[in-house]
Amino acid sequence: MAKIKGTIVVDIERCKGCNVCVVNCPTQAIALNRDVNAKGYNYLYMEKPDECIGCANCAVVCPDSCITVYRQKL
Image (cartoon, rainbow, N blue to C red; front, side, top):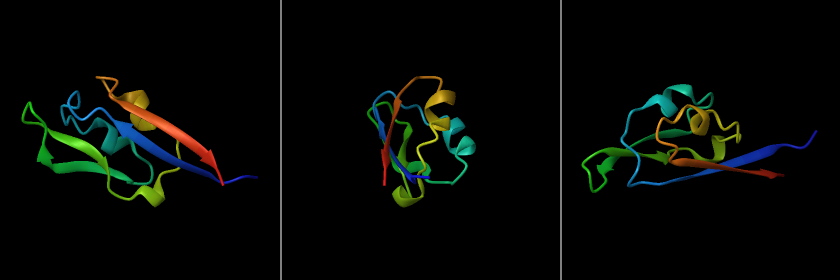
């Protein structure tokens, strides 16, 4: 079975730092950045990019639809 590598793209300006995606990540690959966006919210970033499995849990639970998940077979 092929191994899947995932990555995400976050719309930083739409992210309000609600942390729902971080809690639902099974591999703890994502976290909230210490920096803030233009609205003053901490935004999502990939803390451990090599850990992402492309499950898309983060995108499914995001209330603002600001996460896009990409998958790649290795």
